[in-house]
Amino acid sequence: MKTILITGASSGIGKTTAKFFQQKGWNVIATMRSPQKEDKLTRLDHVLVTRLDVQDPSSIAAAVEEGIARFSKIDVLLNNAGYGSYGVLEATPMEKIRRQFDVNVNGLLATTQAVLPHFRANKEGIIVNISSIGGKMGFPLGTLYHGSKFAVEGLSEALSFEMEAIGVKVKIVEPGIIKTDFDGRSFDFNNDVSMAEYQGVVGKLLTGMGSLVENGSEPEVVAEVIYRAATDGTDQLRYTAGLDAEQIVALRKAEDDATFLKGFKTQFGL
Image (cartoon, rainbow, N blue to C red):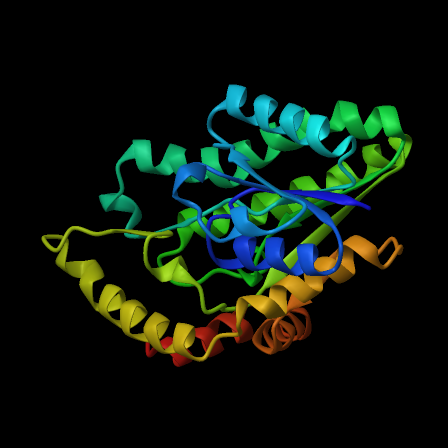
């Protein structure tokens, strides 16, 4: 029986993927910052719910150690933990800028580093990093979030080369708009209404994002793609998840910057 370690498994894509892999007969190490609040995954067989905060190196090491002690081996690492910081850059405190990259980028790297000795000893393993269509293009006012996801794309592609030396594959999953709480507790918006020049784009973004989320895909769509990435046995690096993701990524490849960005401005009424 294979084992997957998932970060950010308390809700949304992470929790749905934990259930999906468990139903497929896998052991699941479902990690989150507050495992004491979890009452669904704890009832499932072959699921270990434990604490892991990607900003706390000791919790990462402890979760990896506990997972290996429980299931003997980790076959797949799913770096899913993350959140979105949007808004006016000029109005965003530097501590929030640092936190966005600490969670979405540095936390992913720290968790990966903690699992690599185990993968290297076994001479195999799969790393699945959750990026986004936001790692291929940028929404208005998404300087921080999109910057972090562009970083995930680049570091994953570069990491794939050195991982070949230890028999490990790297996969990038790029979801489109997904119906999760991303626009709720996983969404941090920064603004200062006294900066009048920015308020037009702020209003249009918030209106447009609401309709996009309503028409998004279910988290199960992403879970299925993650499972395919983890089990297809190929060297494929990137996987889109959701019809909108497929369409947007195709457009981004087909159009030059000016054409693509003009279309995006039209969609948001900018």
